Length: 309
Image 1 (spheres, helix red, strand yellow):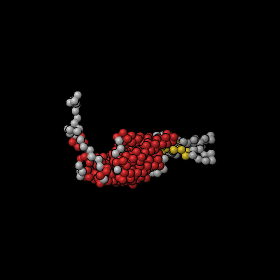
Image 2: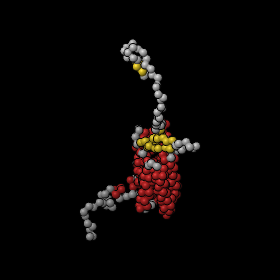
Image 3: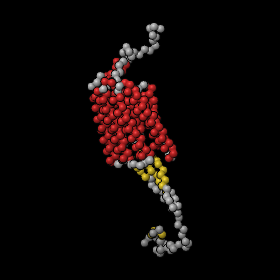
Image 4: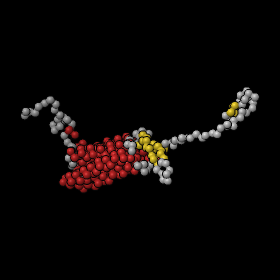
């Protein structure tokens, strides 16, 4: 045996005897601090496959809308083109999500209250938030509302008011998801509902009356009501998923997937096919839209005065 040999935390003396490790004073236990590891809430393989399915469906819808737009004259392509843009943007969004982009973890501090004088416990939850969805809605919502406003014959001023209200709805919904504190979060969420009610009023009351005067109520009224119902579903899912964490990220992805199919491809086909068959809601755009700025009705003059001046 060597001169020194370590064994069970002690060291043998040069002679090989084991030193006395008996404590000479009572030991005092040291307090230990343990930290609960953060809890992660994210999608699984099932949710990931759902994102790929939505990408394929949006891509097929976009190609179909492009094919349908080629069948009509340019002055009648307005609804076809804007509807194509809606599904095209969603195609890009779902490809980004399916390939692992467009999301981040949101830090949530959760307090569990206990009874019988037991101290409250706390934990950190990191929830996966798909912020790319909000960018999608910020871009596609104005296009959808423009379609509905043009279908009803709504004035440009009212269409702009509706689009601004929808933009406010999307922004406040995003702030509600990423804010901290229950009061702040639910305050932003309440603002989102107020903005949505403004959108709903324009679609169901204001634009409905305009469509009635133009004789296009048979097509517009069910489409407008359908849109309001589907968009209500978005706000409900937002409240029970990323805000209150009542459903899992997988269930959130599935719920938004169903709503996106209803709000984009389904609504788009209903709009373009119904508009194509209804003479009272035809929207023909001539002049600059069809012939360009060289057309006599849309000639762009720079630095010239009128002949009568």
